[in-house]
Image (cartoon, rainbow, N blue to C red; front, top):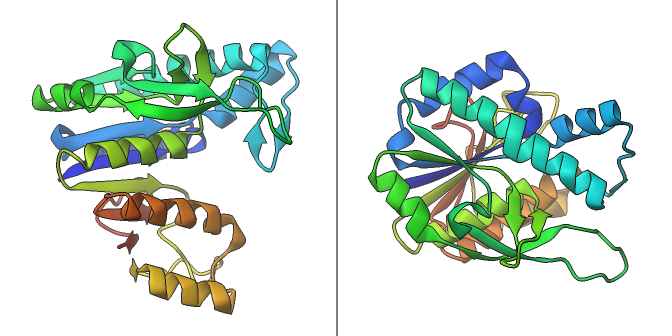
Length: 251
């Protein structure tokens, strides 16, 4: 089983969470690909540089200055912080962005109602590169910086990168996609950490939606997760970064 594990940049900044994640990864890294975000780091760097951050519905507008910041924060600081923490634990990790070995090819998002700037939508994932690293017991650590094949770097949503990588790798072997976030799983009550739904299929999910039982902020993530299952991913797990065998499993 191949595991594609996604963690957000905000969690990486928390040293206790980062250490717990890396301890967990040290036990299963031989079959794992780590995908990370870094939006909070990019926001902090933008503020320090005096660059205005523009967001629409929680998504970043990526003009040229913002792209430069995103590359520095995602492919630089966040990526190398993770790789260094893994190497301390004898996990042979290799940091990658989309342009490294042409691992993720994307195109600049078409302008419709909104011009998102240098935001990339994924066209292809080179599974040969990732499978080759796993075969050599090297963990790929992927930042969400992609490229268009003609030299243009692009900023791509990290959840989208993780989903695309999971779908592509599912053509090689059974694949589980793990989303790590700040809750122990999908909760029926956001104020009760013990209200985790252990298993969620599409029929049960639709029922919870009709009842209004799923928190609105979780719905886009769950919708995308079920799409990856439909595309071939065996299961999706939503959990905290220190318990890869807990949380909520989507099937």
